[in-house]
Image (cartoon, rainbow over all chains, first blue to last red; front, side, top):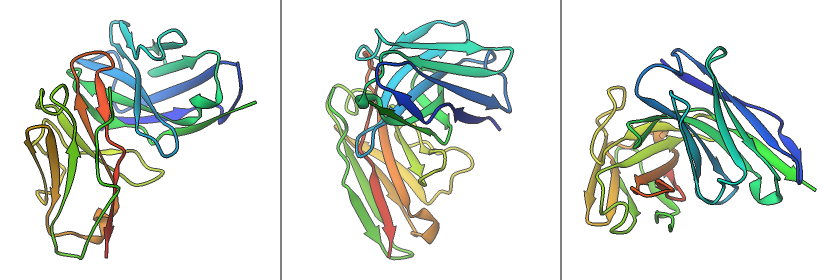
Amino acid sequence: QVQLQESGPGLVKSSQTLSLTCSVSGGSINRGRYYWSWLRQPAGKELEWIGRIYTSGTTIYNPSLESRVTISLDTSKNKISLTLSSATAADTAVYYCARLVDVKLFDCWGQGTPVTVSS
Amino acid sequence: QSALTQPASVSGSPGQSITISCTGTSSDVGAYNYVSWYQHHPGKAPKLMIYAVTNRPSDISNRFSGSKSGNTASLTISGLQAEDEADYYCTSYTGINPYYVFGPGTKVTVL
């Protein structure tokens, strides 16, 4: 059974780059027709999809974040990375990674990691 | 894109049935049969309960069922149990970037 675990700094200074990692166990990230996604949920607000990456490395990002976000795969470590540049307080949220099946279904999630952007 | 609409809370007694609604638009819920429901206990990973409107993963109890009418999808929990107490989120595929829209979540309380 595939399991996902997010990790990274819980506190990021404003204007700096937020960097998170999603470690995947129980399956290889470069096998199967899976995409890997990052999402986030600010306190009291809806989940927001950040972007996705296919096993080939092809990425698609939410237009609202596209200029600042990069998602990448490290197949040697079976990890997915997220970087978000020029962080502001609006980026404070719980960040989740999730596996995406056939583009339409998030079937497996990590437990999320909280990130606070402070000035 | 606007978020999906869900009631903030729903409650029921053990053994009862409850239904959670998820209202979108003709561009998301109404356009695609790709509505999913997730159960979330705070601090834990969200768990897929229903996908493609009505389908249940093999490890999910048949007490959970999904349906859709027009722009509104619904999750019904039958035979409510204490362990069902959690937050429930709906999501829909939208077909255009950003490709996914989410509801704010519904807190289910077992009285």
